[in-house]
Length: 186
Picture 1: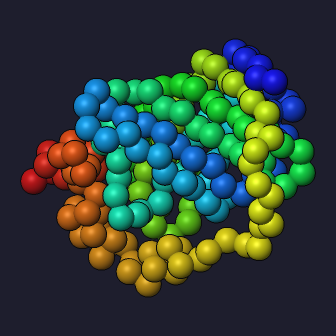
Picture 2 (picture 1 turned 180 degrees about the vertical axis):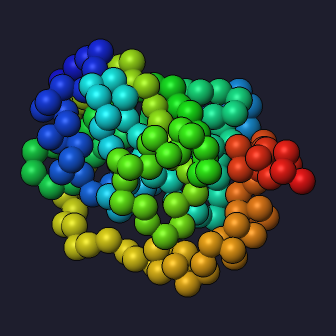
Picture 3 (picture 1 turned 120 degrees about the vertical axis):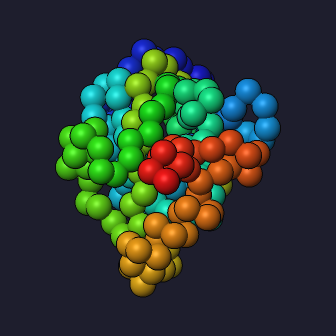
């Protein structure tokens, strides 16, 4: 049933590329565990042991905050169509903010969507697969563009204001890299 690997194989990469969504799990030493679903074409496999995703502006910024305290990240991919499979990628994470040399180097891997606020990069040390036999079938109908449309309508100036008020501190009171950067600019 379950198998463990030290890196992403070509078969894993093929499976990941076929998925229309993924989940990111993170936690600090205390406070809430966060699991965020992600859609759109934002996930990239950079090497067998490194992945990244373009993180879009949302109502919270928990993963980013957790990474300031604890670098552990888990990604989960689930097959909702075809053969059953659950795949988890275990690694550490790092936040890359716009207007940094790392952003300039990393952002070329992505189609920068409206609302792009940061890139999360993870070095993967373990890949685990499990059966997924109990996962129901769901049919993919398409992306919801509400977040992209909202971000495009807001524009960068209003998004920066939104991020400063809604994305600078986690629900557990942990400053995010965006919040830390804003404090150092002021």
